[in-house]
Length: 95
Image (cartoon, rainbow, N blue to C red; front, side):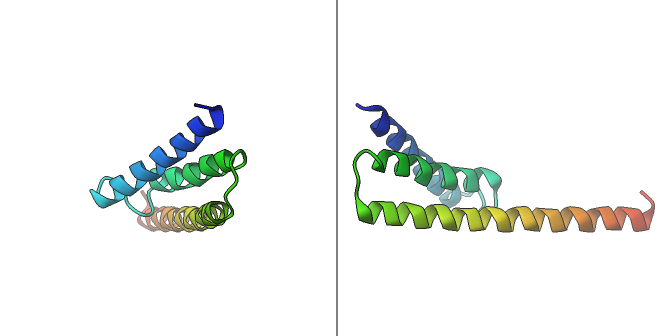
């Protein structure tokens, strides 16, 4: 097994762990662990594809990576809004 194959397998495992976690209710779609696995997976697979190129797989992984970054930005933005609302509410209550 080559190093690129090993990295590709890490990507496959990350993808399956994220999907399984979502399906069994251990992860949520906005959970940073889920989003991290969804970023790690295509990144590893793209690394592997540099050594054994397949255009369709590269396109799929680039889109998956891009959509995962969009999800990450949205989740971080939502957390920031929730934190500022909590801070404002505490300031109103004097706590």
